[in-house]
Length: 177
Image (cartoon, rainbow, N blue to C red; front, side, top):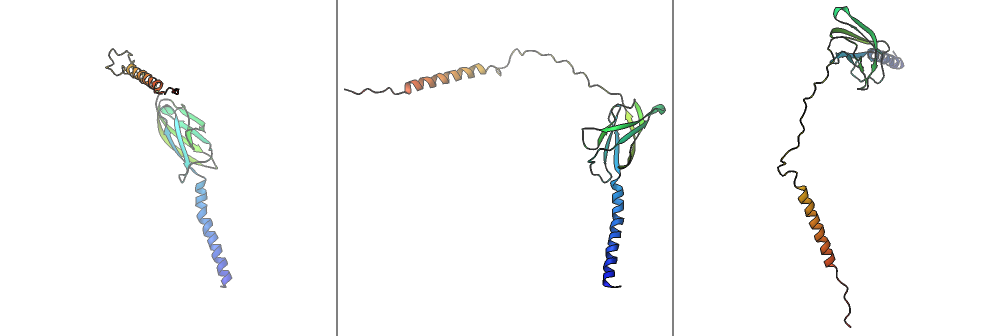
């Protein structure tokens, strides 16, 4: 083998190895990872990332289907991205109370699929706060009575400064003729 043939063979082998190594990475770049969870009430939240953990920089189409108690079915429901962050999706209240098997699919070009068991609960309102009685304190303990003394002190200081300024002026002296 001549020197040129060895160089061409080495370049060709390098190109083949590069293409073989890049093919799995390119195939994985077309897949996304979906994390499905309940939202604490009657909805589902989904976090979508690239399979290698990178955040999504584009909107993907996600479709939710669910099977619940007594064979109830929900879906397909197309999910819209939420403003809480990149790759965050939420279904809103689509499930009734009970245990649901939820499946979320993403078609090509960014394919992905995830299934999770979600416990849907009835939405709860916050507890009503206990009424608070508003009363005026009868004795402030001297904590609120300081301001009249401070105002009087300022008036006395201002008056003393005015008197000092008036008396401090020198009267023009008249020449003794």
